Length: 229
Image (cartoon, rainbow, N blue to C red; front, side):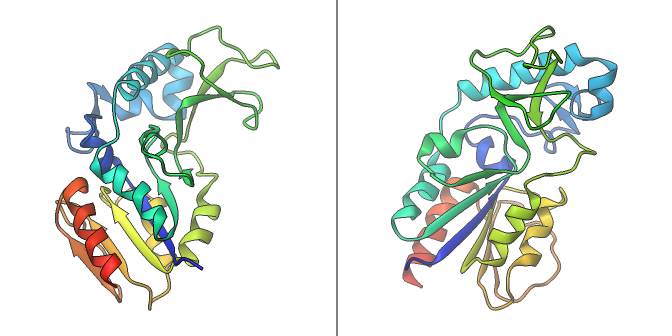
């Protein structure tokens, strides 16, 4: 039976495909303050601005292609039982061929009812607009977990992390909680790798290894190391 490789990915892996990250640009996301577009308060204050922002991000994501980091994760499925837990809302992991992807923070390509959160729909075009409603007649919102909201998939993600034979973190600052806490669900004896050009500050953990490179080249190094082990 193949070993279970659990991977937590963040904005750094998508950045190499040309998608903007907000923590590297002074708290701005494509010119917007996070508080104005990615919180429940922003939605109540100005839903049109929020929808316009996510329509722009969706267009950017539709034009992006997976990079070598995404491809290597898909290739590792030939050697391991791979679960990708991503903080990213794009679909680049799926495009690259990863079969088991858990989106902690939702998806740009889904909308959900503002009346019943269990009603989730694929976004067929590139836009979600004011007046687009669910079957109950309420306005649709992006199916994105905003700052200040609960992360519904966190429990499932923690379960996967606790069962990992190898745990890998790629392209995340490890400061966005609760996702950053997933590494603490991994057993002490399990090897843990962090791939990022800026090694995040984390509390010392047993069997923790750093690869101080960007996602694409760092993943090449990780693949070489892990297949030797």
